[in-house]
Image (cartoon, rainbow, N blue to C red; front, side):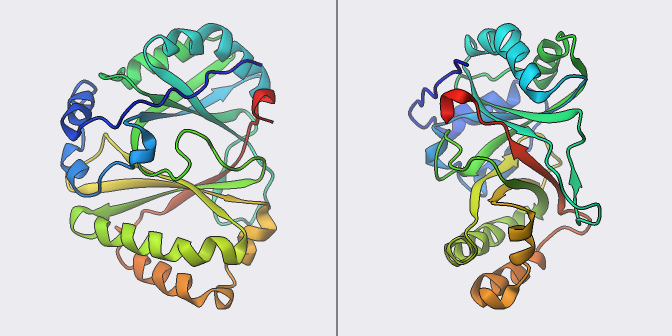
Length: 259
């Protein structure tokens, strides 16, 4: 299947990014000065669409390619990832995508990016789609740019909220922890994304991390294996806004062109 190849553009100025956000709805523009956008993102803004369908993820991707992706590509969109359901134990401490759900992530290079209502309307036209909800994010940590560096596995998408006063420290603790956490456990942080539409003074961060399987995720709970990252993660948890930290589990659809 022929998919769109990333066409990275130079990093846009913060003024242009704020202008893009203002074209959507009242955004958390106050957040954008706290942590800079990752330069590896090339100035892209990411849409994160949770889609309910009545066909397989592969079938939906064909329909998206034929009827949606070509059209949105003309407006500056690149396919970033399709996150699909994954098997997990019933007692796992997070939700999972249901068998009839997937998450579509698109990277938008042009400004202004479309309103999420317009994107939802484009996708909802597909017969297989029964419901959709889209949100917009920028990337504050994206080490591999628009290429997802991992393949099949167990991905955890965890959303955490921090105040403007604490988010910079939380981000620093994360980066310091990942330097030992990734090699010690054989896992990978794919990216850290910040929601653009949110309440003032609050930063909703969506961290996507890859594990080879659920067993490896469990192994990362063995904090004695890497006490350095465990200490930093514990300190970061103290900064969380109470009630946040919701996570879902997924796999990733690997198009033939990427194999």
